[in-house]
Image (tube, rainbow, N blue to C red; front, side, top):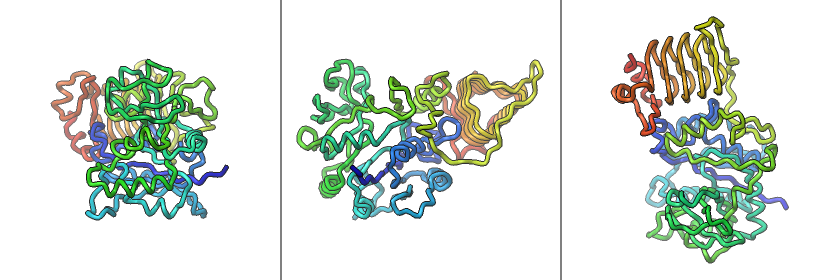
Length: 418
């Protein structure tokens, strides 16, 4: 059965917990894995799943995101049903406000849904790292004759206090929602795990329009799907949980475990990047049957120069993007974005380096994240003395990750490092 699907990506969050990387960019525009942006994951999932009509709703600090979408995600198709269109917040509410919640974001663009007239609407967030065959979730939704289907991931019960937990029956029907409740009920048949909501939804279009209009007229609502609309439906309407652990990606081994990470904090973001370095990473970027798409840049190949005993350009257990030059420097357990230069006798360990950074001669950088265009002068040490790092104005997490930059502070960083 052919089903018309409209995709909507919510990409307007502030991402304040990921600061300073989100000082001048939206969270979905934050680089990941050397050459990608966080939003590339949801858009690739849509395209690979056969969803070709997508609106991306933006709001805060959207310029970097809009530029990325224009450079890498324009189809150039003559077909009206094939598009990825960014939609800036247009304040279409009566009091001309910014989006008040996830439901309000859709309601303020309800005309786009009505004009497209799809059978179902896939409403997904743009700020998580994961692979998902959305077609499987839509098949589940259709077979269950659901009004709404919510993607749910099993997590250990001890983490229930960190998530919005779904209480579901044996058939997947949602009975209730429990927000960050350590006593939330376990999954059916599995007392050690709970269902955590992933914030990804499939709505039957007619029901979605009814719900949005009713919610918009409720003065007591915060106009959010997770807080207002879905809890009211639980236990009554046909609303189901889709078990993400059963999702399968073409080209992956049958026993592979679906990968999903909430990269809402610097530490979580750092660990998710580091996951990519494994010999057999849980998140496989090399699956040609499920490609991760992004902007294509005309970068030259990465280059490693010199082979002297104490001056050998090399990278170990690392990801090195196009245009990088390692001229006698050593990179270990790190991820380098585009056109990064590591000079002679420099050492980079356990780092995430964004595009166009420059690591000077004999500089040492450890457990750090460098934003775009940061220059580390010769003989500078980063990550070895956290008091000194903080004195320079750099952000240091409780776990000891040093973050240098934030797009607006590149010139200041170059002046501060001595």
